[in-house]
Length: 164
Image (cartoon, rainbow, N blue to C red):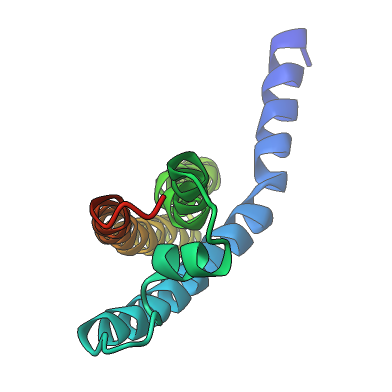
């Protein structure tokens, strides 16, 4: 075995080690996206029924809890609230791509060996992972964009009232 094939084999084996962690992370991101969708729906309902309650209006509630908070503090708080969904919307497609590429190696090897059942199994995993990752990314991307608009509206409301 020459040095080049040894490096190739080592790279292949290292890549295969990451399949289960990637599958776990994609499943976790998908669960997070569904959880975020639920909390988003609750927040949307709370915002519609505004009344005297600040439920669904996190910056207004934060400002009420910390009356002397500056615009910069409110902006930082808004960024902290948006960060998990923004990260999920960016990381999920990358993990989906990795989760697609890892099973492709064994699928191609199985194809060369004539084992079509194993090819089918590996391709099923590959395309399922990318599909789930893209769904998770789409959900969290949409949520983070709408929440960013909501937080900007709250910040404008606070500034127009001269509070911060």
